[in-house]
Image 1 (cartoon, one colour):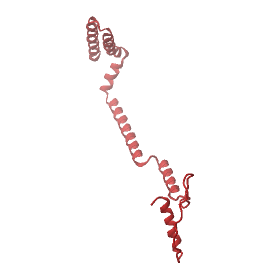
Image 2: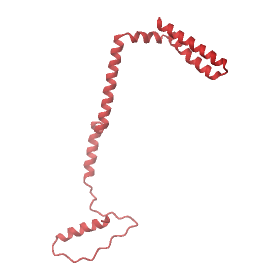
Image 3: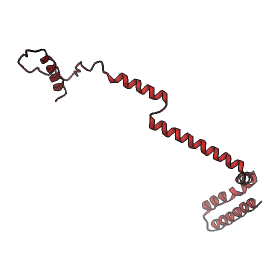
Image 4: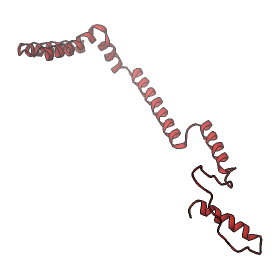
Amino acid sequence: MIAETVCSAVSAAGLGIAAVTAYRKRFLAAARIAAYALVPVGLVMTGVVGWLADTAFSPTAWAGFAVLAAAWLLFMTVRAVERRGGGTRKERKAAARAAQREAVAPTASAPSLSQGSRPAARPATTPRASGAGDDFSDIEAILKKHGI
């Protein structure tokens, strides 16, 4: 009962302010103030104010809000953990498989030549007696290819 009286008083005061504003020839502002002033009376007439008053003093309603808050908190915690941990279990498994496939590049030893580049000239070196010299020539070729 008190809530309805307060809402009616707020609406009456708002309509009074709107009338004064319209008297000062600020009609758009007066119309906006009148619109805001009619909202509390509309809420009382539709029963929203009574429902809010019943909800505010109901322990069951507050327990329901607590359950909703706990669900929201749990949902946000799960989202934060998923973002930090790399997603769901399915996404982590897919990422692990992709990383395992990319760990060994099958064409890593084959040189890649683009159209505009020409093969590097082999430096004239003295032949080595052991077979270990071939390994070093491969390494030298790779280093020269990368400009090192």
